[in-house]
Length: 116
Length: 114
Image 1: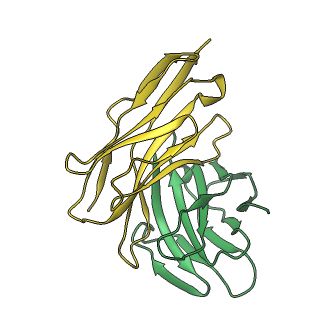
Image 2: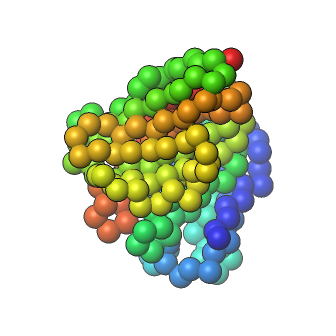
């Protein structure tokens, strides 16, 4: 079974600075998907970014980018120019490529605080 | 372009009552997933359904919990004879299922059992 580990329960960053959230995972599969979801105080789960394991290029979405290290099974999220609206819980998630196994496996989350 | 809809957003039940949670997927999506989030924890997978079929229920408790996704209408997660430990946020997600599509989440239902 796959597992996802987020070793930073809490992080804080000064507004406009850059912060990196860590995520590692364990799997025996070679093809899979990785996601970062954001959960603000409203508790709505919002997709931040997605990475396909077969792609070597790191995914980017505006101020959000990932550092995907397949051999190390590491998938960190970098937030540049942090904004107050980035304050939230961030969850890393894994999804198998295999048909019939589409469930997401989540880490325990990192609570990000933005300091004005 | 409505997203995933869940209702009710908040539900209060007394121990022993039944809770029915509804989820309408995004337009065109035929795959629905239910997840549970206990306080201060991450989301845990419960069940994956397609129209009229349960594909994966490996995360569902063996008793009191059931789910359906009928040909017409929303997906329903039913919890019978609720206990205090069922208090949680229940999230529904849907996907288009073209290759390995992203799952998009609804706003969740917060269930409180008194």
